[in-house]
Length: 123
Image (tube, rainbow, N blue to C red; front, side, top):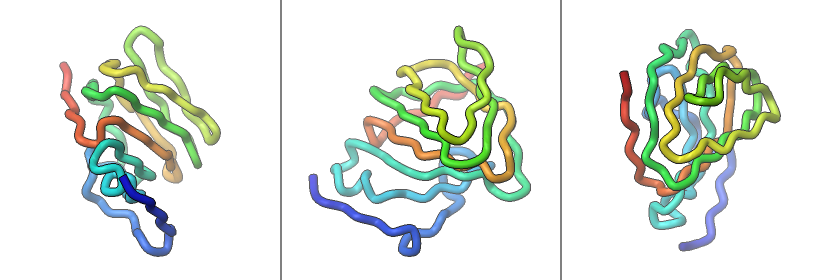
């Protein structure tokens, strides 16, 4: 592992992440931890909406902290929750979940271990 620092002006958002309705800004942690951790800022992509598909992730740890706006998520066994700026979620490994809706200014910080993880689409 090695030291890493990244400034917002040096790494723009891109539209190459897991969900087509989000833009992602990689924070450089994946490379600096030899792929052990992924950290990114995720924001709503202009003019797009969530489609509410159930899925889960094969992870050891997933942390979500909402920076701006809001999103409505449903977690199996835990109901529907409106995540707003300042909300922190520890998303348990393998939990079934789906995003139902988000504000146009939704932005969140997400940390996941391992950095290479699998997402499974569910019925």
